[in-house]
Length: 348
Image (tube, rainbow, N blue to C red):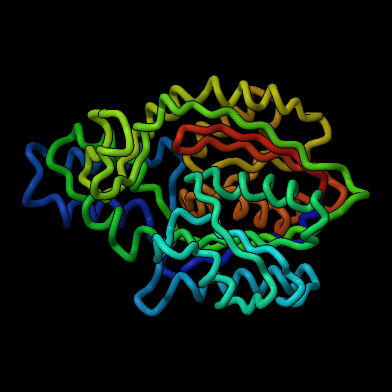
């Protein structure tokens, strides 16, 4: 399988850490018990500690589908393919406008993919990586020769699961389940892959930890009937983003090491390491441990945590910057709600 193109489209509204603190002040002023200014300072310190700086949200006149379409058309141009040549479209966004049908169908219509078979892969921030592995497997059947993977992660500025709910603090302890929301950015990405029998196969490894499923959730009405009880579920309300980020990083460190060891990439050949954009500090520390610190390519500090778009956005940035060139090896690492942990390697 060959990566023919990967692109990202970022909305226009630049949000700084200062903007985040102001939003907390705006939405918490009548609720917070204690020293709100002190809580805002703590959030600011924690954001700086993770490496968070800026992220981008939609302006009032911007729409997710338009940014998805922009990313897709740019990827097609770079890949040298026409829309009718794509025979498989997979949508991987947690962000979506529909529970039914799959987001792939509206995306294909917007892009103009008249011949593409469509379906979604939904596995939180791991969705893109799962879809890439699935595309490679489908290529081996001979039924498909070209695939596009798209997502549109725009959960913040449209309201819903994040704004204003997660910016309403009643007490300092609320940060335990709300802090990760303050790092969220928005983005759309498009990836074009084609079957390539002559190239080196991509290599994937995954670890699933379903016992950690309560640590990051957006619940739906009636969720109680679909899981075992946990006091972490719906901590911030039904339908509201709830994420125990510090605990996720703490328990995930050993699993990231384990999945990296299973992948066992040739470290001295790696030109770029891309990771999930959940904390620049945490991922850089791990990269330093395994000898890939100097080649780690971060986007977290520039565009925030863009959910399932994090890894493809980092790949697009590494390629555009010239860090990753044709013939060079890349490694991807991620952790995701679920929880799941993944690693892959390929030669561009």
